[in-house]
Length: 575
Image: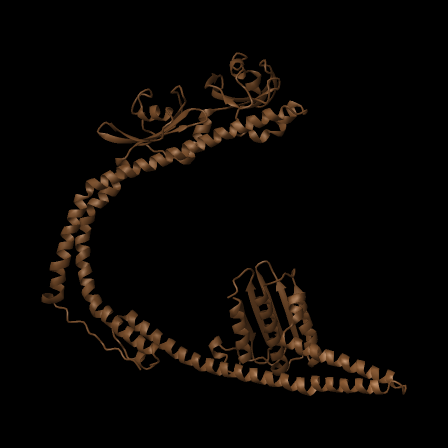
């Protein structure tokens, strides 16, 4: 057996490794950290400046995209209303069936004639009833198959925008009206967190502010503001502007469908300062941390590293089969001692498992040989002999055709043939239940219960609960074999008068249950104790359940019968 030599660490003294680590590693590392930290402060500021700019640019693009999506949605809605106006339905009915659009058009929807006459409307009744006739005629003349936005109009209700579209020149014109400030508020408050040092606003093509949030005032007049100017030109990006000894980051993005501009402005130092202050204090924290790390290094080398090396060597010996090597103490901290005790316990369990496995394999081998011998004996003593006798009867029948006994002999041949067929079917069902593949698990279990009741002096009750569904072939075969083994244990060992076999289909599990009123037994604490206790049938059931990812539960006590429950999660992997 391979042995591994122990390699002890050299002693650690102040004049030895500790001093060398402090002089050649700790001090140079502290100096390097201080130099890198303070030297990189300016680089860090630049990186934070860029980071805030990129963050605000992404926020501006996202908010502008959301505005564009909302505006495009309104264009599409009005275009759909215009197309529906060509139908034969009354305009009021069309508007009534389109009430779901009113959340996007706060003031409502309406139909106008090409001459500007109000034909039908929904939404704010007072708005459409009191609408000045001079507001829309010029705008309605621009309506066509593609919907268009009106300029920003001021009415008694506030600043509004109309959307109009007409399917053809002689068709009614569909019009929707909404407050641009409401739309901008909904988008900006959902996409941007405003504070006292931030500002976000939306302007139209004429430079009028539609909506703004945040406590920061506009740093420049709108006609000179770099964010507004660039966004109205259709550009997206970030720029920087110095205001009152503070550098502001300005992110801007256009809103394409209507020519608006969205701008976000804030001083980047307000975002970066907390992190920068923490960075400046970091070197002062690292010095004592490094000193404590040196002490931890010394302690770890003596109380952790060396015992772990020794334990690793013992574990290697254990892997080679030396179960005694792991039991010698390696010292060290308490956790290493507990780890070694755990390895000792696992070593004992491995030894026990190996013995159980050898016994189980031996039992399987013996069982296979006995099964082969039984099949050979039954085929030779029953099936083959029956076929020989059948052949002889056929020959006699051929010889006695003329003496009047042919009918009786042929009747005997028929009975022998039927019996032989039954024997062969019984043998094939024992080897492989063919109806499991054809009829499913429920039918196979029902047939198994009937056959067990016919062949043994025990009443078997089968029940199905829930809606049957097919399982993977591996799972169905495993359930059948588990039921077969369970019923066989009841017949041969339980001395029971009644056994219940049931399968339950639920949305999450498929559960097989076998319960008897027999003598029962003391259930082992773990599957590793099945084989030493002679419970090879239970071990086989446990292994089949493990193979398909099912859970086995055994409930029993002496004199109280046995209940086996196998639960398979629906859709669980077949291992």
